[in-house]
Image (tube, rainbow, N blue to C red; front, side, top):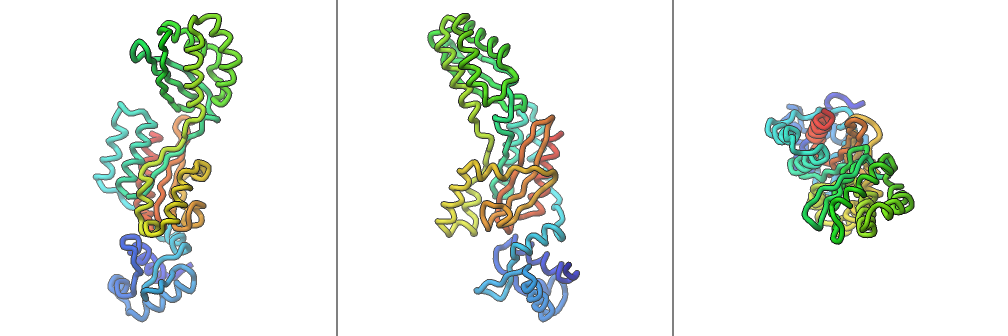
Length: 329
């Protein structure tokens, strides 16, 4: 463990560097701690030797190392009290009864992304682990119907289907058959069941069976492959100093964001707020990922904020805790 003075110096350097990404010199620390410049320089050298600080070649000041950020997060950081404006903006979402929970979650993360200038991600359970709960059909006009497909984990998929050459009564017959025969089926098995069990029955009871079968088959195809990831503020990461001047770094990061396998690894298994700094993020050495898991009546998902290692850890932790709490209420 570090001494009380070393803790104070490291905390100041981390928090100053988060505000302004420039090496922190001894003078500003002397003023805050009311100790001599020689004492501060000596302690900064000790912290550098211990691996908590790094010295850049362009200044005598220091910046936090990955180890320094980790020590700060584990031992020195205190969650930042949210402003009244932040609370109000997020509370307004959950007081809007017109919004479904999934929409409220995405909107909440969108607001946090705007507040912090970081990238926000929500990851939900994939369709392969869900079962079909019900199918509904809502007429739009004489030729189009919206098929609504719902899973047992609360995922809802809307698909506009064209029923030209058929009519609503036949659509309702197909919906009734699907609800009777394949509700409870795992989503990744629905297409096969539709092909071999439902299609022969539709042929017997529905006049324009081919049109409707193809329409619902297409709807289930997109449902099975739905993207369980929503990202907001993707470009905010690319505007940061750590990435904006390096074209190769930007290109690599974009490729990683577009790779669902890499992003899906962000999913969290443990409870509470989890912070992964630099190499720990397994995405980029200059990136921090802060994430938490939510659970609403068995419907689980992960909320994640991606930012630089010099992220406002205290603020992001408070915002995520607030969002998670309101989701689970």
